Image: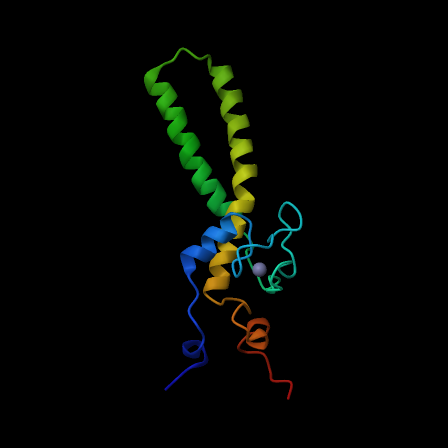
Length: 143
Ligand SMILES: [Zn+2]
């Protein structure tokens, strides 16, 4: 038995994630994925690949907080363990600013990587079967 997914060519997951992380189209790697800071283009300006199928939702902020939290937590513990003599108020203000900058920098990269993975896995209509992606399985047929 051959399913529709088995007849389609496989997509390189790591290449797609890498292209998405860099803010590029997961299909061609040339066109920009975002038309604004976190606004995804409806289609790739270079190859025309439809990108509006993405459903990143809350995953990029979750992944961003997870990564940045580990980096900042390790940094704070390192500074405390080595006792560089930095006043607490300087550390508090400094780590807050570093956390904010890291989160703002990493968030679009995480969103792009997730969209790249969704594209590689043909999720949410990226596989070409748009009707199946938009209608829940329990939806009544319109025909
Ligand atoms: Zn493209």
